[in-house]
Image 1 (cartoon, rainbow, N blue to C red):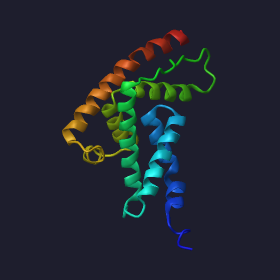
Image 2: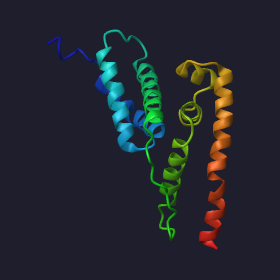
Image 3: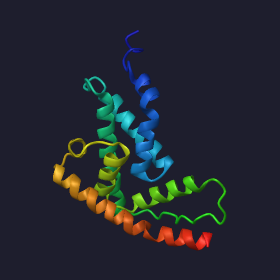
Image 4: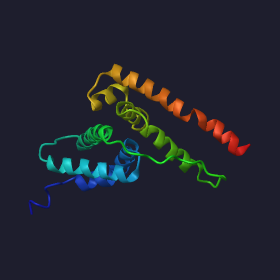
Length: 170
């Protein structure tokens, strides 16, 4: 009987917050498949340490997500991935928002790991600068400068989109 209650509350946590955790993981990794793998790895780590984690288990899970993502980025720096380019649709068919979201995720993947993590925490998770600094284990100033640089780089990466959109519509 003790075995059944070993992970009491895990099913509720995953049922209530699983979609939000997966969405964050997809933004951190750049693809749904990699995001699912990241969530799976974070859940495995949480389950291994279940008896030691008291209080905010979702917070522990989120910190684990970010730390595992950083580990993967470091590994990828040694073995870079080749990502496919996103082509705009030839005719508007109601999936413009989906294409825009995919293109934004692809642009986000091109940012350095810290900038990407800061932008996800600040603008997707809507954490304050202090909360983001706590999750990432850095100073508030680092969060501010990383957010500024990350937004500037995203603007550079997406600057041509308006011109391409005008050419397609024109």
